[in-house]
Image (cartoon, rainbow, N blue to C red; front, side, top):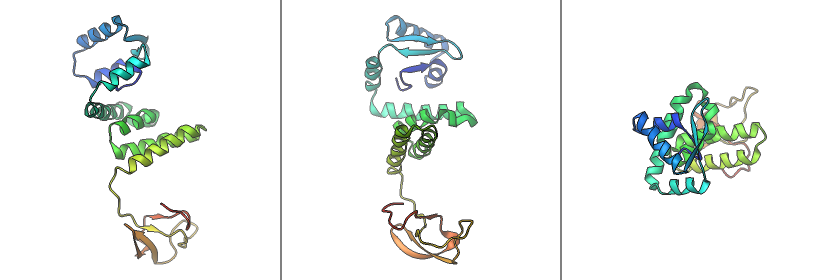
Length: 193
């Protein structure tokens, strides 16, 4: 149920610790009981839950800690299987990273999913992904980044002109050497950076 409504058998096999014949036997039993039905054999064997409600009940029957662990394991498997084609799986990775509470990965994958959605004009989908990234950020410890004020002078290459720059770090305002500053605010009127 953690995999979703569609259950790709190779992915399921990577998740469970069952010999292949036993896994096939259990899938056949679920198909006979009409919980799952076969939707594809090529390019990979896929089963689908017959009813969304059945899927939801199966998912909710897992303890929250079990669900979290399975989602986290699924992220590991998807990353390994995707290799350098992670971008093709970014929506799934974002979903499972959030539910697996892998917060750093959730931020990264939600941002990528949002950017991809915005690139294809899926603005509502992009908004949801970016909001999930912001939500995941709240679970990460605050970083003591040096952030320059928006009115700091920069040259045509985006480098600071002055040797020392007004910046803030962890809520304190300091005059910092320009090579130590990592970020700059976008607007002097912004509330958060």
